[in-house]
Length: 334
Image 1 (tube, rainbow, N blue to C red):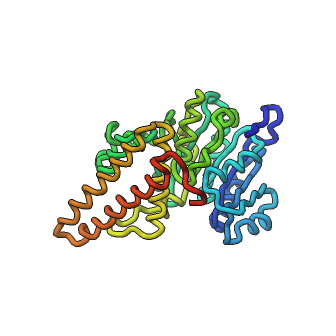
Image 2: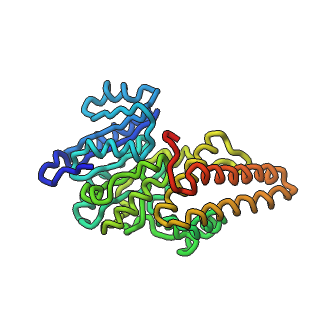
Image 3: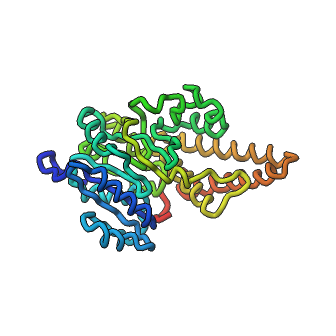
């Protein structure tokens, strides 16, 4: 990947947006970018992941200043952003989900924070829903133990505990800036030099864990990851992606769960080696134990939920086979 040297930067920011069948919210997203760019010299790049809803045509008709990159297949989040990186000519690169909208002053403040924090390789902001609800915006790297804490429900039960709330930093004051391990990919601003050092997104991650992996590699190159709460971004993905009800696991939910488990195994094998088997055993044992407990319940809803847990055991087994224990990524698109 080639990153232009500093004197040749043509823009203050290159904003990369990946879209897959999100025409209407993509329009709203692009309008927010135009509204908030202000005096910044900006380059807007949209990578269309083989949408079938007319997204690309809408961009060509309504936003002629946008650099449109059409992919003939759905590349997933990371590889599609990598295409955008190749076209980026900004002093900073901003990743923005197509279902995310910049709040007032957020883009300008992002640039100011990066200018003032030269060791920052990547930074994120405060993600909120349309209704102002909080979304996880600054997280720590996953571990086998933190995964068990989340599975057990203790993280949700004791959010103010530094111990149980470690992974999502639920104990922290959301209005205080902090150096963190990683931030969600819905919005981030990246220093091109850090990206050149770490390399782009690992294309083996089709969906989930790709930003965790990138942040880890950026840190390994000596850069830091920052959370800045005065950068507000409205993200509707957090409103629409609700947890599946415990007695149901839809076809779509099963697919997303399989993708999560595949990526989790790829991540653990890449960064923690044998821990990939540990995380597989932890989740499998937890879901199996919960299914046994629920099937003996007098409550019919809990008995029905036992079938969901058995399904999760089966999906984890498939993810382990598909990735050969986290050693390879299945043929894409997943």
